[in-house]
Amino acid sequence: MAGRPREAPTGDRDQDPHPPTARYAKPGVTASLGTIALSGFVAWGTLHLVGAVTEFVEPGTSLAMVWLVSFLLLWWAPLAWLERPIRATEEQHASLDELTVTVQVPVYNEDPHILRCCLRSLLAQSRPVDRVRIVDDGSVDPSTGLPMDYDAIRDEFLARAAEQGVDATWERTENRGKRFAQMRVLARDDADIFVTLDSDSVLDPHAVREGLAPFTDSRVQSVAGHVIVLNNRATLLTRLTCVLYLPFTRGLRSAQSVLRRVTINSGTLAFYRARPVREAAGAYENEHFWGRPMQMNDDSMLTFYALLNGDTVHQPSAIVFTLVPERFGHYFGQQLRWMRGTTVRHLWWLRYMPLGGVVFWGTVIEYLHLFLSYAVPVLILVDDGLRSQWEEIARAALVIGVAITYIMALRIFTVRRSDESPRHRFLLYLLAPVATLWRLVVLRPVYLYAMLTCRQIARWGTREGVEVSVSG
Image (cartoon, rainbow, N blue to C red):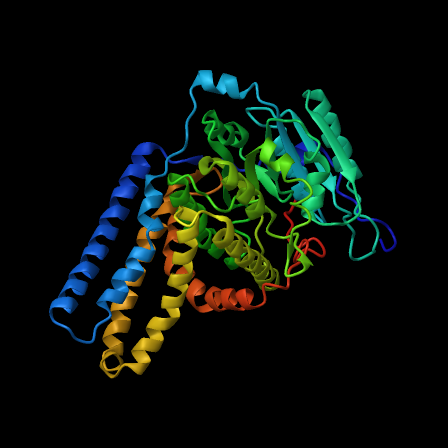
């Protein structure tokens, strides 16, 4: 009704659909898939190496050396298969249970139903958390201009938390951005571990227990959760997103974790030693770029602080389901926000990370790969010898590209979801070449545009109202 705040549905608490669960594949499964993938990469690398040597011995017009360099720039793809969940013994888990864990959930114009699901999943953890801090950053119903009404959800959550002995609070503040919402409570919290959780996400019941396991190593400063798509069947775009996530969430991030240098924890679910986060209070929420305040890309900034203090890893068994855009307008807005933020963070890594370190050179390699993706087609066009072979080159690139795409996409079988059949996973796997084409034709130009317009930074980005919702 016009003139009234948006109300969250009340209803019976058991009416919500049972949230999905997921399990990371057993070691034997990942080892088998990894053997297939690594064999494919070895064959591809050998082929390019032979071509490069032949070109050196018998000079001529060929792209063999370029293809070999391109193969080497994909260093992370085979390395990712060496990642395994970090396990803790029962004795170590007992020690981890002594740690005080605070979960912070920033809320801004969130769909009431998914917010309720998020909070219920948080209180249903096999390793209970100690504190939960909810901060509503001035949510407003865009249709009325009045505050979003989460009263029923808040009252239910606080009552449930009290029943379980969890210290929970819920605050509403003026809208200042996600970082201010986080630091309003974390800056003065004396917990051992901070967990950041997005309000449009649902935790697997063992997510917290699994996410804490790497902290048995005192060098570990942050742990990235494993993000998968919640609304995976909503539209063709969300199905495609399931595959588009793979190269980062189960590819580059996994490879970085093997080297203990994860550069971006997803804000969807991440774990941090509390001290570096507390010490960043003041600087974190007041970051500026080119004279403008920057609130987006909060997750990479927190990871940056962790990198300065020690190791950063990914825990593939700490699983969280998150909503992704279902409409193209929302999708491109989100991608622009992420890409602009990542461009800024690249500059930070090149400036502050050790010159001989993995993060610095990983950033250099990423830009070199981007350069080659545009330089090679130009080279083919301007070189007479290559131009005469363009059809043969195109066919070879297509065949090899599809083969490598399917090899990399094998990682889709490393997670088993309760709401997903083997047939559905296989159909998603078949989408892999479409996702690769989408990245090359659509996302690559968007990335270039984002780099050139990285000064256009914002607080919450695209969410002026509820963008994605789930049916009750």
